[in-house]
Image (cartoon, rainbow over all chains, first blue to last red; front, side, top):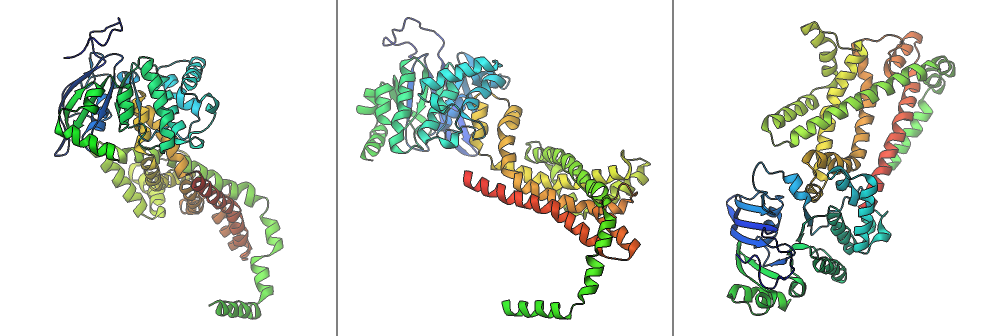
Amino acid sequence: MAGETAGEASGNLTMTPAIEIIDLHKYFGDLEVLKGIDFEVSNGEVVCIIGPSGSGKSTLLRCVNRLEESTSGTILIEGEDITDPDADVDHLRTRIGMVFQQYNLFPHLDVVHNLTIAQTKVLKRDKGEAGRIAHDVLERVGLLDKIDEYPIRLSGGQQQRVAIARALAMNPDMMLFDEPTSSLDPELVGEVLDVMRQLARDGMTMMVVTHEMSFALDVADRVVFMDDGVVVEEGPPSVVLQEPKTERARRFLRMVIDK
Amino acid sequence: MYAIALVVVVLAVLIGDWDRIAFNFFNPEVMADMFPEVLTIAARNTLVYTLLSFAFGLVGALALALMKLSSIGPYRAFAIGYIELFRGLPALITLILIGFGIPIAFDFRIPGGRVGAGVLGLSIVAAAYMAETIRAGIEAVPRGQSEAARSLGMSSNRTLFTIVLPQAFRIIIPPLTNEMVLLIKDTSLFFVLGTTPLTKELTKFARDFMVEIRNATPLTVAALVYLAITLPLTWLVRRLEKRAAISR
């Protein structure tokens, strides 16, 4: 498949894709929400997944780190099969950062402990090292001054930036974003997208489910349009978002832009 | 309604034999006689029995709550059966069962003697009541919390103990404190197992004192000591509930 294109002239081309999804099916009861998904995300690539609600895009993302169990099919994380029943899922997840629509910060812990708890308990880093890393990633998202606050004292945008920092503190190889700005007040969306934009510039591999079309146009290397459990169209953002080939994609984009 | 209540109170004040009431219920000599044992033995025993039963009950309740939430059928069935059984029975029956029924049937002595049997019996009952409270607390923690923890690579056990349970217990401190107030009062059932002068709790102590001197003042004293323990606790619950309501 289109793993390495001419556009990727980074010089450090790895043959193994960061994420490879092969013939993925997912049922909720009798309802088939993913009907055979095939695609891959290369190292350093930013892929935005768009589509109407109920199209299966969040389910797909949640299958990648097995928060959702797929019914059949395979997902390889840097070549390792995470869908294998014997896979060390906990270990693989430390390499996959995830950011949720509802932030899901731990409300009983202050910001610094939100950032260090998994570092110390899962990666077994010592407190000093974990604290230094927490300090660094908070600086990256511009919230160093909130290090001792509890999440409830932060705005939605700040909480989401802390959530991104929490994922980054694990030094993941890739990040999954599940509608990261959908619960935010409009005036707070920009600060979160700015952090994500910077992350993309720094070369992070990203898979982003989003409704932010201008972000996708701006930042994505590739846009995937999903509808009704299948990938309908994928390609460079300028093509998929501005000159879509399929009628379904055209209809969806018209509706989004009319809003 | 208010007027009727007022008339009743006025009549009671006029008709009541106040000297007699004072002598029998508020007799200062009897009160003086009860100290310090009412505090150093009776109240102390009540508190010790309560705290022990609460602590053991809490451990049992946590295990039951986790079993009830388990995906393994037999665990769930056991938890449901246990909870329904011991919530449905009078605590007195459970105490007699543990104190006499089992020792007689299996020729087995509960460690700690009668007090041990009482604490065990009350722990068994408390576990049944608190299990439902803990289960509700665990279920009240949003799913996203454990998803976030799992996505950071935490195992399901670590997620439970470092992320879910700390939040669950914060939610259920008020109802758990209520359970403790109920337990304080249930320690009065220990009498059924038999007591020695040193193992009497408040109710038994007051009752024996009353029978001995044929005066009801010990009941008044015991009631006041109970209230001195339970009122601060219920006050604490109200404060905690208010604080919880604000922080949402």
